[in-house]
Image (cartoon, rainbow, N blue to C red; front, top):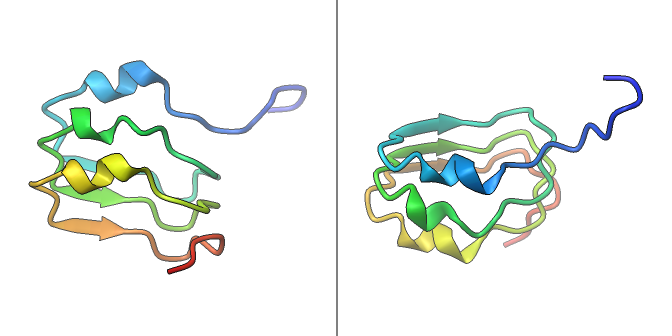
Length: 79
């Protein structure tokens, strides 16, 4: 979109989707994530591949139902 700041962000209200099970955010240009993933505690599958992430929020550790986390092809992430 010309003339707009095209940096994608996830608004806090997004994390009120407490029954969310699958979330795919591939190729979105995400460079960071808010530390609110603990609110989406039913999340089973999270695909964040092909973005610009440099770190992951600590709240991802609280997702006890998470069976698949794809963070491949985020060149800024290091182990």
